[in-house]
Amino acid sequence: MPRPLEVVSLLPLGPRPYDEVVVLQKEAEARAKAGGPETLFLLEHEDVITAGRNAGTDDLHLPAEQLARLGVSFHRSDRGGKLTFHGPGQLVAYPILRLEGAERDVRRFVRGLEEVLILTAADFGVVASRSDVPARWSSVWVGNDKLAAIGVHLSDWVTTHGIGLNVTTRLERFDLFVPCGIRDGGVTSLEKACPGVPPPALGDVAARFVARFAEVFGREVEAPVAAARAGA
Image (cartoon, rainbow, N blue to C red; front, side, top):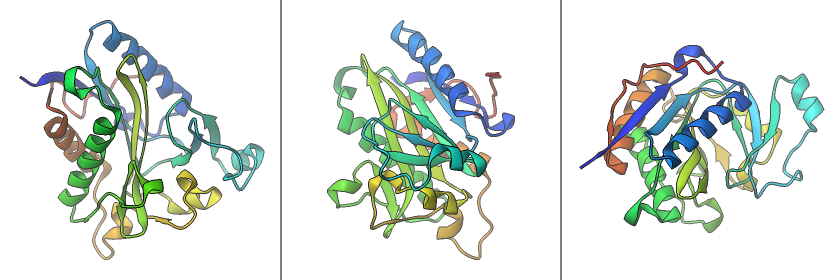
């Protein structure tokens, strides 16, 4: 029987500050650990570069002070991975799941997120796939260009953080650093992958993502995608 999943869309509130959503995740994580509902947050972030647990500063082309002058903040994160960018036009999804039984496999969880992204991209006519290159594991690619990044954290088998799927993202922001430490690959978006076609609306991509997420992870959505929870 599918487990219930509360979907909280912050998209109607516009791009959110990174720290604000970290707090929301921590609150949802505590609820899940206490046996409460699982939550899937959907949102856009204000322009931010985040550094995961495996990130150094060598891959950052500018110091934080110069990034700030460009309107890009910099934050460290307890997720896995290295540097990535979030900003308007990118669908960010943070699933706060309580993994149980056979779900307690980190690789299986990440592969599930990849599958959700691949299926979502296909819903909009984009053929995306995993990479055979070991350094490119835990992401989704269109040819040699990364379409979506994945970075997660698990504590007592409750997940936080998640994915960033480029829809109409300002891809030049990725020139400010080495995305995920990969120097021989590019970055793309659903918009760039379908030239000459109007890009999909972020809300439409979010709706398909939720449907595919429920399908892959065996959850039943309890709240509508359009529901917004004020976090500030």
